Image (cartoon, rainbow, N blue to C red):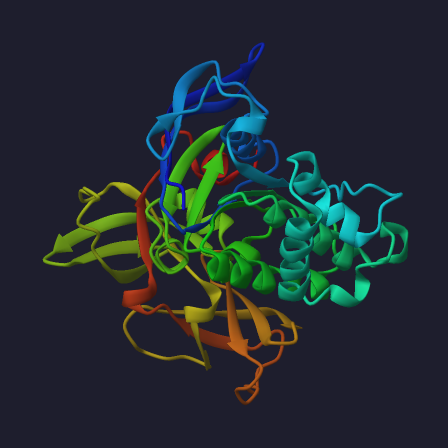
Length: 370
């Protein structure tokens, strides 16, 4: 199982920076997902690892060996594209066995490997089918089987499920992770789907504007992101511009549109009284009550919107100071007797609020997807 290290990898195209000073270590047997807005450098990063893109600066190591000048075919990587690139005149069996044939593997050797891959993906019944006879999901599974059959221990996946329907994509992503773990591979998976990354990754890389801005486990990045953009990009969040009132022990008090909120202090963030800050909270952690409530961290407001999302109900409340806050209640809970226009109270639990310094370029610029 390979260990991959990037040291200061940079790639530019004229005046456009595709990747800036990317430094990263990918562990043996890890399933790593890379997420970020379109054009942020995700594909450039993965193509640099596979050798399709040659960095302008920096070094790439696989198992401690420098591979930056090494051609693609010598790196021992399996690559799966978003575009399902199968040979249209070959059936599933021949597509999967193609790489082994090129390497000179015997017919019997190819048969054993291909059969194993098709069995693992539950595709033996499709082995004689041409790509034109397959569904999109089965075509992509064929491409994955071909990459796995090559014997590569490093699997690089560039939006491999992006062209598939939601339900098919959901099923295949779990099959893909199961295969990677069963075969003891290291996988690097680029995706635009945050839910996909959160559900299958051991760790996630978040990128923006050609830079890696945060790396962590799914629960770390969702529940306690250190970067404001990560809180925005992974899932949904409310962002409130506040002002620090005071700091006492492990608690920071801020003014949010005339209401004082108490927030758990971040030890890695230095804040001072009167300083502007940003407070974030996920919609599922906001509590909703009828009428007025006098509790800590409670804001009153008016219900502006009620939506049914299937797994949850979404509510948008506007406070007298024009703060707009979204909250979600699981559909399994009893629906509260609240309608649009009603006066309500919302409580923001101290342990689920996140606090950040106010961005130098402003919150809109910091949270922008471009």
